Image 1 (cartoon, rainbow, N blue to C red):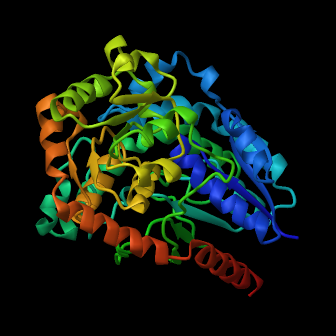
Image 2: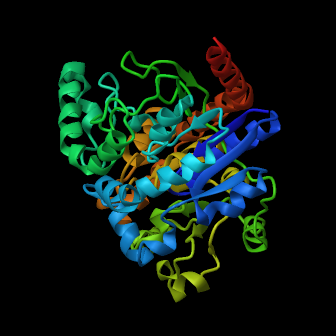
Length: 424
């Protein structure tokens, strides 16, 4: 039995794809471990995988309201994540994984686990990179939208030469963030000591692309040995809708669901207060998924019979029962919204969200209102716009395409192909 280690950091949108990969590998007969933060221990063990603890856990990084604001800053969020949340713990996590990989046959890493390739190289273990969203590839032929440059794709006419130069500037700008990683590579006697792990981290063994070609097509500057599998579309078999939400769904017209995923929802924002004003003006029924942040709601919202407030609900079970989805456009929420076949209003904040939003818009499945420009007036306009039948037709058509994709079969073939190459 081959041993496979998966490593991941981040929100539920970063965890769920690895739970999908882990459960499929367990089903195929592999022994699987998942290294991630302690918050996700029960999720990992519930699918039959061994849990390996990575630091830091969320209770180590200060008040949630503070770090979620820093993480989702459109200009400095990436730097904060790298320099404050990951890099300081890299050597400790490296040592943890070295102990856990004595008999490991393959490592499947996450873009933020900068220490995973070091472990693989030190032990001589084959490893794979994973691309959850197109923006992390930073193709000069398909330039992504960034939170600090949301209109970047509109300048594609400038050509790949311009964007190659631009990405070199990005690489130079972030170079000093990773000095401890360079030092660790040097200490362990590895090659390519000074390669920026945020820009040049693709494995020579292969990269798993976890979105479909229709969402982002392969480009000539993509990494070698790519396996484009489609969206992993995680669904917890134990999940059910809450009684409150189930009852609300049965009491009237299809509601519009408003959600900020599992990370942005924890930061302070006026999103739900603006949403409620738009709900009152348009007369729609609404479901607000507020996480654990009670500051998002008011007594007036709670008393309104046209609004149902919940913490978290299963997206696969809820989205398809709603009229439309208003969300922050993280890749996990986005893929589930696309699977629902319902129109979307996208409110991107940071990171991959603006690029995901542009791609959904280009599919004809929704409209964008950037978080920094969110107002009641703009949201009302967007709600009225997505009632146009063209959005429902496009969304349903794309759902049908997603349903035709066999992710399990694609992943199984990729893993078999990779191990066959290793034998040779």
